[in-house]
Length: 373
Image 1 (cartoon, rainbow, N blue to C red):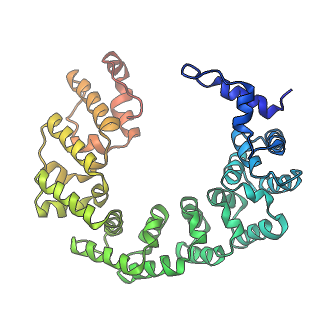
Image 2: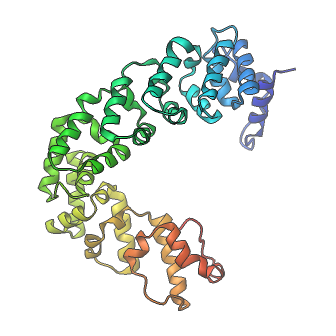
Image 3: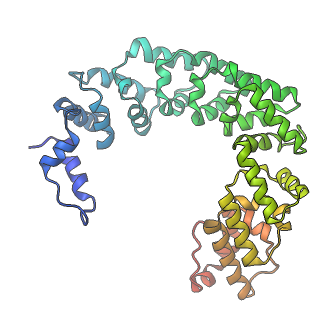
């Protein structure tokens, strides 16, 4: 009888849609999954990972196929047990070893435990470590992350903030932050930008701070030229938007706004109100402006005053919400007119509570889909 891993994968394969495929024999499945790179030990190891460590068949096979040189899974078991004991869930373990199967061949005492100790000595909990490492398990084989942790903790002020950054950008631990992040932050501080604003953007847009200092200064100069006050909460947002595209792409976008009827003052005003709206693709800008102009008869001055509307999705937000409002207006259920700007920008929860849930019966009678608005 085929081992359990055979039976599992055969079942998975045969349960896929066969409408457009010829039946696959067990022989072909074995050839597909267990060719020269996945010999018998891989099959045994994969079965072991499924039974003992609750891995999915896919992850078990991927990991096992990288461990052909091992005769027994004892060392793997020690490392996996250590991860479990240190707060890793099954899904976190799977994510970790799927990205770096060779971690299970490493030295628990000489490599892995010492790296965990470094994190713990900095005050990180086991759950913090489990949140950080799955995205970049190679950190466990590097040594550069010690100064990176110190730098991030000095800048951000707390382990909680460091964890937030590293969950989004664990590669910070293997990057020389002293050549990029530190001088860029110091420059922003010298410009009068508040540290809380810097920390916020370091957490949400970490790549912005990896630019060379000269390039970063150039972005700041361009934001200055657009009329931004360096102490404004929108200042770094402007810098990030300008840095998200080449200057050639930026010029193409400005040409589009001019073609839509924006004056130079309009462009500056709109960019000042919502820098992130200028990061939207040209295709989306055209789609939203054309839709609202044709549907609601508005002119371009609306977008100058409310450029953040350009961030909305036509299909997922604007069309269904307008449909809801049209039904409510036709039944005279709205006490006052809902302004288009508010319609576009209120949260899904607010829209549901105020304009959907109280009128479910009427909306259902009109066959309006009310999920996810």
